[in-house]
Length: 478
Image (cartoon, rainbow, N blue to C red; front, top):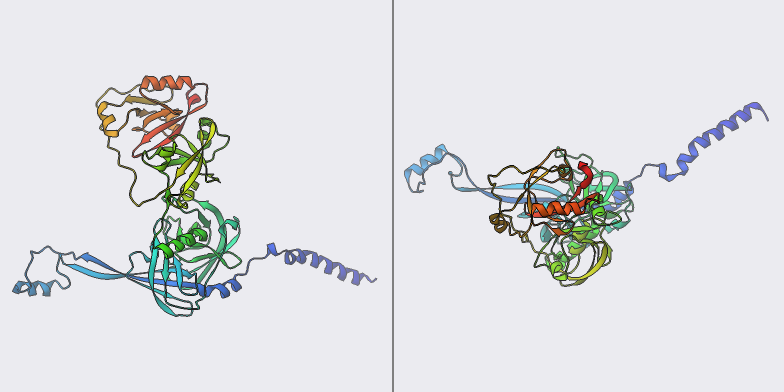
């Protein structure tokens, strides 16, 4: 074989070895969303709303003048528009997104997109427009169901958010800043996110570019199935910063079905105040790992109290479903029909126990009352112990105001001490140490002595209107 032939053959093999792996392995290719957009884009709609705002006109203050008074015309000439004090109306317009979920015209979007709107217009990608009515909306999950009068409309296919994997490609279609049918893509950043003030939605976090006008639009997986509704972003500027959150579609569809059938959403409640179980708290309560929802307060008239659940219990399972974090409990209980008998597994004093609870209906009323404000008393400053904690006794008047029979008041927290590191604050009221009531400062110190062989104790603390458990490191001051 000639040398030139060998060289050519070697070059061909080398070229194949460099190119073949990249072309043979689909994972190395960037995704192509074109076919997905062509097929499912027509089911995404633009939503425009008009709201009439009525407010009192402002301006120089004049005495009320009857319209038949000659002075009225003079003021009209020099001060055109509504007279000061008279109401005036103007219209505001906003834009959002949505998607068709049935061929006969049901549309899903965010509740905040259509909130208080007087007129709602749904525009399809083929430029057809329909006036829409609100079938119902749910502010707690930010889901709204609309209805337009149409037939044979293009609709989306539903996916299963539980099968989403972190790192998987996803795509959004919507109308950011009014630019209709805008496509953006990214990956799933996290699942099951709990956001501040949002107890009923395990959000899907993505890095898909979401901006004003995208709200209510669909989040697609690579199969072209809707897995979520784009709802909100985290931003310090008001624009996209790489943190977007979507409502899982199974949560949204459950809400939509209730709105379509009943016109409202009902949720279960058991009447407990809960907090996260940290590693330190798990240790103090004898749990092998940090899991569950720690009960820091119980509604005395609620289902949990009637069933025997107490402050200090850690709820591990509800109807057999594991409660991994405290955020799992409200969502799990909310999905249970009021009146249903449910089982609750709790961890109490080193043992697992099971209770039967009849779930009640969650109302919009605030279940917690506002605690009276304590008045500071002129007294000598308390002594601060080795834990950096200064305490005082509750006065009889304070006990009556706060409706407390036990507890001592935190008056001083020494910076750098164990109490400060635990998160105790001036004004906190320590109610319990490891499930034992605190009746006086002397008894509190005695309880700490009993538990001094332990590294930590759990303090039940009243703070403001609620209560919480705080893990205190006993050997931190040694």
